[in-house]
Image (cartoon, rainbow over all chains, first blue to last red; front, side):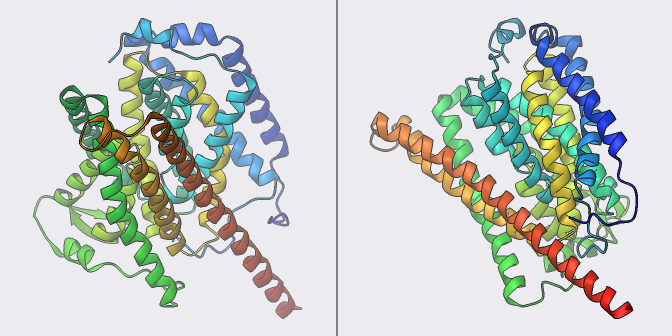
Length: 83
Length: 361
């Protein structure tokens, strides 16, 4: 889909954020007992899941955006909808 | 709320099957949300509960995946010029108040009528709202399609024109999505209703998006994108509230987020390939299928409350399973329409570009 846009695809950026994303998920799953115990304490610890969600969304969100670009899936050049 | 320490022991064990399942459900839910601004939550929470996750942990973890997903989706759609941040934030804050009020009503119903009473209330609210709003959205999309004017700009509804014409000094705010000033005395109750619905049936967007389109006069493409801002504001506040009680299972939230961020990017891209009325088609179809799913379990709760004859246990089990299956079907059909519409739009674009190329040569 839409691969011939004439601009360079973000291969390196996708790889970089992809690797950090894998690292974050590996860290979360390997130490799941620690995370459950700490994040499940509630009270002032409530900021931990919130901050984690923001960090994951930035890293993984950047990766997934670049992933589709690398795969050639990009927005229509002339949008029919929206403004 | 449960005691946080006791709740920790309720965090389930994960294996590759459950991780894969959550990733896929997240992806499909994200795809639909990226397109229509909401959706997925109605499947996500029961999907987690079917894995043995306690109800409140499922709701909390779903919410904790929703706000970062909505954030990424709204940033993506803002790049396409589809987001009205001011409207989203104003509606989001009033929706937050609606969530708190809706949750307190839920608690009261549960305390008075028990679990079955609460379930009956939720399902009945689902059925009535989805029948009225979903039916109207679908009818409107059908009218546009049959009228052959799907390429034209959407007409602002009469109700929205009236709302925009009311001038209440001191309360008027300009919104770029409507290119008009409307009174916040209209936006606040609509945001509140969206939040109340989110607290009751977990999908505020089923009222938020149609109210933006039909009551305020926001084009459907911008309404569905702005809903993501509302979901972010509402989800952030809600997640914090649940996290204070230690109810968020961060693993579940992040695994669903993993799939849904792939999906939401794709769904957002999809909106650039379709005509605006397709937003209404997808939304209407999902709402009407979910309506069937919820209607199937209404007799179960009625029988548990003794309002009708007792239904045998195997029948109850069967009805609940079919209801869950129909809900998954709703999400899959929605995702299928999105992908199909995107594919068709892409093909049409390729053809147009090839024609342009030929003309230049």
